[in-house]
Image (cartoon, rainbow, N blue to C red; front, side, top):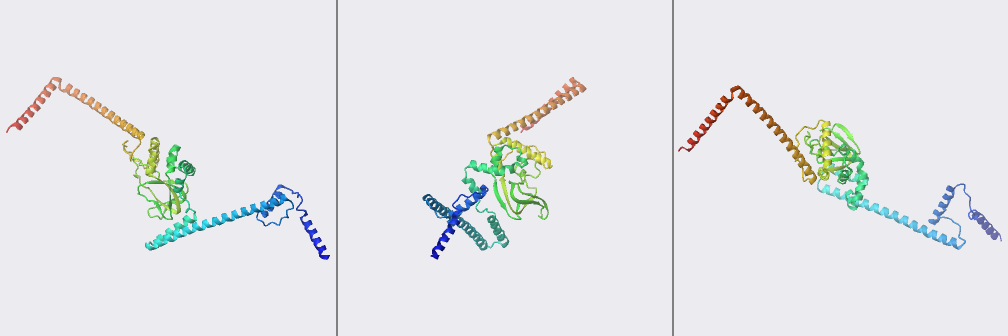
Length: 384
């Protein structure tokens, strides 16, 4: 009987314990109500909550569906995490395999240790920066051209407009130039360009820093950061440039530096479709060179150009050549007119001074003398 009474008391205690959980609870605000509901749902989904037993059919169905849904969600999360870890391990394994292959290759070829360390540090850099899985060329080949163009414009348009040379260029030309940009990576101490080299590309600093140094590399003149552009004047072939399209400074990388480059051939290929923009760029380039006193006055030949040009530019240059010929003819005609006028004036002065009859007799006498000399020369040539 005592056991029964204890069992009854225990049941009463349990009923009293669950009494508040079967009644509608009043909360002071929505946050507390939502928090408790979320807590109960989370415990139910992961099948860890000590919830009251269902008493009705609807409660049985709801609890069963809730538990199954929780199992599915839990299994999905665990599966995704496992797949993520497997992929990361696979990428890491591939990178280590590449690293070991490079080391074995350099050791077999007896590459100097300093260069080996440079290669290893570079591979570590691209791994730490997450560049192993990013290939811009592959992205460009995969995406539709128009979509990739929009992506490239959103990334590079602001930077390219900072270049004084391209400030007022039409958007279509800038779009063509952006699609031709290529990414290059320079490691610490690499010289991007040296003074005196022929310029074949211009540079845009994407990340990192570069510095302009002296010939021996000991003195630093200036440090350039992200968004800086240099080398643009050396790819325009401006007549009269004192530097002759050669680099005017030594530029060295500070640490690892990512640069976008625009090749000279790519620039001219894009400009062939925009001849008026070409003239505008040449004028801006001349103005920048004149500002730095680096432009000599030379006579430009309108037909001097590199490579094949489109019909519009050929017609423009032909017009310039015709204008130049007409100008030269005008100068020659004016010179002939001045010479003729001067000759007539001098002849009139001589006639006035000597006399017309005397001048005529002198002219006839001289003419006869010359004729007699010619006849004598011909007779001597015919005589045996």
